[in-house]
Image (cartoon, rainbow, N blue to C red):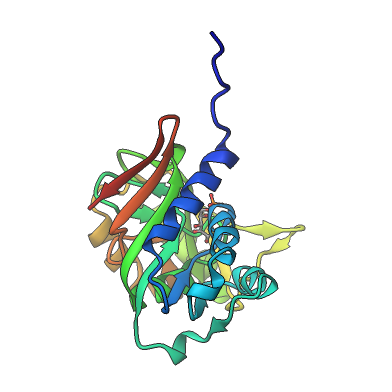
Length: 229
Ligand code: 5RP
């Protein structure tokens, strides 16, 4: 008897990226997230590009990939609503609350998610957690507020670090910086998101509780598991 090797994380991402096609509404514009899992979805979307009107994208990187594959990208201001938004997550809990922003695209991701009737999260099973906060929480901040916001997190037991790229502060698509905050256990994601979003200088906190997932397509060793919230 031969046993097949377990699927790699990359293969799980491909599986869920392809599975997300079933949520794409023919003839409509689809909301597209950012990240390595979404890249698999974009590749799958290209195979049915003639059946959709186009996409609204959550980052420069996804826009470039969509356009390179011949998919029309619309400005978010040009659409009133989207049936569906498809994106990955850094963490997702049992209620569909997520931490996002590992790819620094959290603000635009939250905007496109807010336009959509349904958020389909695509993730491999390593992303499923009992409580949000194991993954360092991304927070997009106005640069002049970074040190102040880091002190506010420190007062709550968090350790915030400015995200760097090539030794320099990473600059987001919106011209801002990212703090990654370790040491938080986010027991009440809705209250946490509302509270931190009000701190002066916070552009967006990477907790997606008000814009939580409606469905999660989770890549597991047994195949794609669909979880509805
Ligand atoms: C980007 C994100 C991504 O969805 C998140 O980081 C997951 O990425 P990946 O699919 O590469 O694991 O929030 O800002």
